[in-house]
Image (cartoon, rainbow, N blue to C red; front, top):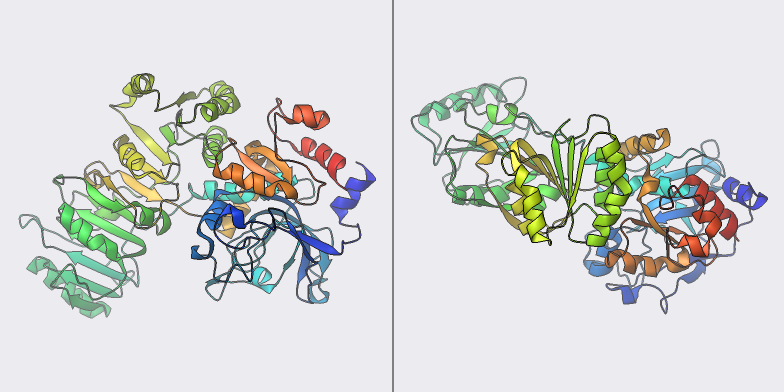
Length: 571
């Protein structure tokens, strides 16, 4: 290791007089930078309870593009961006270069961290790279919002041997791993609000509720609409014993409560489901208790399935609690099952596919579809041989090649897929994918579909075939901690996601490339290196051959390649 690189790692070099930052002044890439260049700014100041940090690597994310597209309309931006511009960048590797006097027993210059970007203080979001200055800058202050927020300390320590890119990319990877760790209720929300609707109940059935409405666990409030008299009388009597407030609701279109945790339908049709579903609270459940198929598909707010974690469950049994317990919602991939990744060849899709191949007890069949032939070919090149060496059936298909696509999909028409992970935020793609679910299959809508976006789903499958449709957004600090552990133990390699690198001056080109889906994987910016253009890993063969020589198989970023890159490019 050169003295220059050792000094960098130990953060011993004198600090500069100026900070370099990319300022976003409003919606549109034309509003990024001053004359399309990063700006000089004063070095950040830090107080006795703060840290001064250096940004070592910053991953570019499609979420950054959402901020650029929406500007001040973005839900995480609360300020006048012209007067107080945003500095993007939330996938971060950082090193401490200054420690406030009150923190010197906890931190030292040279300590390395990554950050859980969803910082919250007093219930207010101050996300890193949104409200708090992010990683498209050379230096920044870490204050008490980050060190002592609602979830405690949002910094996670990184081992000295961990690469800068791989620690930065644990943030998007945490979102991927979190998708398979989702937990859903198997009982009516304790202390919540439940609404039982019997408007279309089958009077020949004997409806019961023998779990979730008892001393050990029960809602705080119960709404009732047209429930059979025998059930209503039993619930009213038990509610008195439990201290549960009971409210009769004569009109299903006008419930007196804003957000409802559980909506239980004793019989239903499409119109009733579509009328009552918008009243669900975050993490809400619609439980369908019926044994006949619906007459048509239902318009489901798939954006709220994704962002608000709504879920539709059901049972053909008249015992209401069976809708929750007969087939609990599964988020992990079925061991030995058939998994289909829709939109698999983009940066996030590749992470899902890599995880499915590398994780123990994964699927036995992995189908990857994408409309980009070049990305799909790169996906096959990156993972095909590895998957087959493990005995997995690995298939890459382009739906635009209609004849070959239909022929290759034909073997799956009867059995379907146990898991369908949707990475394309397109309603008709989501609707079509739902038609391919096997019995007890799970469709995970990972793509960020806007709230209010609807797609048609056959919800009869929820109680006749125990199919589940779930969704996911972002990650928690525990998810990030788990992913960092997996990266540092070698279980999963974030470095395999890197597709292109560049210096801070290349960030605007990098963001344009993310927007235009130029690269099959992630763009990583190294803010402290000398001026270096946005460069794909294969193109390093010409521009930096000694770095290229340390790539794995001439195409995968490694800690060794990063070390060589920094030795060459650090000032």
